[in-house]
Image (cartoon, rainbow, N blue to C red):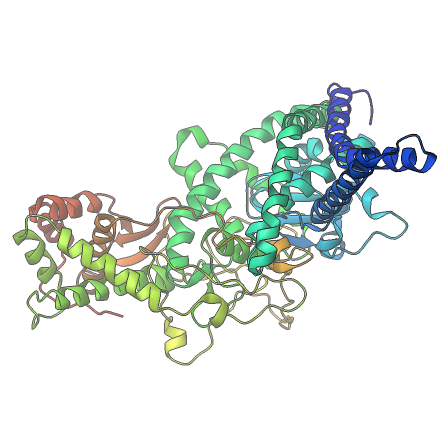
Amino acid sequence: MGEERGARAACAHALAVLRVRGRALAVASLPAAFAVVLLAGGGTGHLSGAGWDAARWVVSVLAVVVLVAAAAVAAVIARARPALTPTVEIPEASAPDLYRMVQDLAGRLDVPVPSGIALTPDCDSWLEDRTHPAHGRPPVPGVHRSDTPPVLIIGSPFLWWMRVAELRAVLAPVVAGTGPSAHPDIAAARRFVRGLDAAVAVADRPGLDPVRRLAARPVGAVVRVLLRGCRGHAAEMERGVAAAASERAQSVDYGLRIVAQEQVGLAYAGWDRLLTRVALPAWRMGRWPSRLDAGVVSALTELSRRDRLAEGFTSRLGERPACDLLEEPGLVDEATSLLAARLFHGGPAEGGPDWAPVDWQQYPDEVVDRKWRTEAARLHRVLDRLGVDRDAEATLARVMDHLSTTRTGEALAAAITAEVSREATARPPAADTAPKAPGAGARAGHETPTRAGHETPAPGPDAEAGRPAQAPTAAPQHPGPAPHRASARPEESIRPPSGPQSGPQPGPEPVEDLAPAPKPAPPPISVPGDLDHAAWGPGGDALPLFPLQPPRSGRELLADHVTAMVCCAAVDTAGAAPGLDWLDGPTLLVGGKRHPDLAGRVLSLIEDADPEPLRSWLVTVGVRPEKPVRLV
């Protein structure tokens, strides 16, 4: 480690962390030292007498008890499994260009090369130590496990939205952090802090018997004391390491990094919008979009079309995208998309009849249309149970008449909430329905929690007809996302969207006289080691780890169901079509155009029992509310 600003401060605080460990060892050894002095004095005849004999027995017993307790605490700290970030590991054979870029960065920065590269469905990048024996990572030949460099974790949206030069500039300060990580004092301090952090959660680990759980409580108390003693120094050490890495990285693409940081914030905004508005409705329907990272490009391209402040971002798409550094970007996108569904929604570890991938081409039909008709069917089923005009057909007029004659829709909202909760409770756990992952490391063995306010995924049309669900292909075939391979492969070049999609559209022109190659398996969603603890945290955290939204209220559920009924009526009687808006998610297209003013009219019906705004909209669009609609 050089003499960058912050390097000496980081080393000083690392030594302070190690002094906390040394003081703890000294306190644990103090009774034994007294016992040795008393035993030596008794053997030489200097400390003789009944009082000294009693003191020797008491201190010796105390020393043995303290040493046994200290050994137990040390064993728990050493054996505890540090938490790891769930990632998709990228072998060097599947991304040689990406590895070469990182190796070139490390050479220019004069720091050790990261021991591996992994992707995570998040807009951030960092280094993560995976050298603990419990992680099960194979050691690097000729390198001691403790000297192995950390793994470089890259946010998958960066690869699809950023250009190659921008990604290199953003990763430079991250890769520069391998230099301080190799310092022996900093590495030892980090291992000690990670061990303490993992040991705190041992008592809460699932599967412990009552005796071991009771014994782990005092160990956790001792570990918390040690953590409080070194917390401040550990934080200052990390700040010093970050400052040293940032200063060292100034020699590599510093000017471009300032521009690239703008793209980091933009990618984060597009990723958050895509997850909450587009992916979440699909996850609730038992479908997971298999090209989320490519969807970020489409969402941000749509933003550049609507927002004048974003003008010029589309011109960047002509440059080489960073995902071109991967050999099979479509397969990597599929793996990270499944991991995102696992983390943010708690879906099963693998696909199945009730958890099938969906391409962007099929999203309007497989997700939007099914979502509307499932919610409309649930709405009429609840009305039947409430005794509202039981003999009436499933029409929009039935819903409007009921809501316009009641002061509030609280009873209907409560009934819908109860129905959604009942369906979610009746759904079998994901761990029982999803097949177990192979030993390569796909997440398995965790039950998916059911929550009120989340619809039960219903089998799709393919599953109902006894046909296997459509699997995503290696090359993207959706018209929405911008090209995620370089133009050197014209059969994979796709134009960015110009607006909302309305059902399947023709994809790229097929290449003639080319035999279809077998689809390789996607990279495993893996973190080495024990899946129950290393992958999802030492405490066996329940899924989803990072829920995107809190459970919806009864009023929100009622509004969604009434909107779904209106959209079904528009599709069946007015020639409307389900569509996908990259920024707003499911949308209704009438004549190929969106109608964003529908939500306010539905709220007027629900909250004010005033059907006139919605009725006038229906007349304008040409919807016939008295006609029955097709339900799931």
